[in-house]
Length: 212
Image 1 (tube, rainbow, N blue to C red):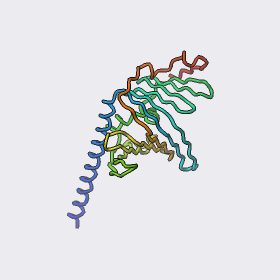
Image 2: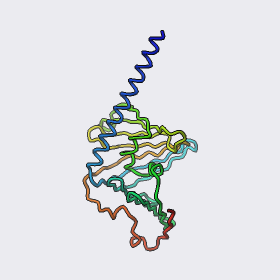
Image 3: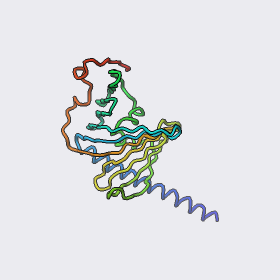
Image 4: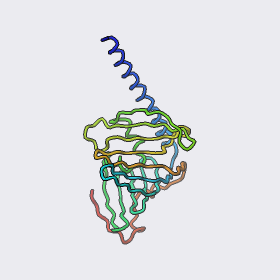
């Protein structure tokens, strides 16, 4: 009986190890595809769900990305990040907040963060494949190794044919889900570095608030 129990434990550990290896391999391929893509233009839908309050807020947006730089446009705001500094322009108040976000803060807003954060600090689980809209989708789940992390888990769906993310779901520690669904993805576009920085000339009436 004891030998059988040890065998079951060993099999479980081996299965988990294979699952983690599969998950890492899938994410490695997705990261490699992104790093080779040059400039990337993405249109998306973001659904923010509060499971406790039972509310859903949904909007469409556009993201321009190159390496760790990005510009995100949504109906009520524009965010720029040049790799170090972040500018957030709020349209209603015409206010721009400047900050130097931490890596953990960027996890909730940066479309490209998954291409690096999975390499340490997360346990990876391969959840299998399924067919969606005629495509073979691979699912991977990331759970933080750090206790009391702001994000409780990240679920990603990747198109097996081209290694491109099709959906990313971030669940925070209070149960709020942010679901990013990719509507279109164009790689190899030429995007100047100036695109990822706020230009005061384009927003002459904006009030700049430096929070650094």
